[in-house]
Image (spheres, rainbow, N blue to C red):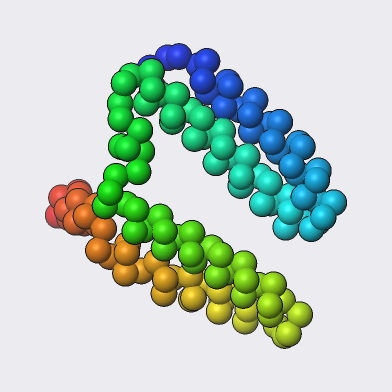
Length: 135
């Protein structure tokens, strides 16, 4: 994507700034720091999606290539894991040690995404590249 055209990068960053300011203020009032972090994550995703989608449209690349069929399982597992992590946090945030809760959430998330990540075809390519570079 490094083709020297900054129009969509600029637009993407403007989108991030506007969403961050507006949604960050609103969610910050509602949920404090967690709302601000959620706003930042959403703004970053929206800005980056803007750049990626614009690039694909401009160069007539199928938008389906943004999310190949073999990646749909890992995306769904990540979304499910994030939702589960958020639910666990809200259910158990006041019930004990925050360190224990964080470890529990991380282990739960990893248990959800490990199988789709292991089965993803890119794993074989990455292992091959690592072996080639190290050996």
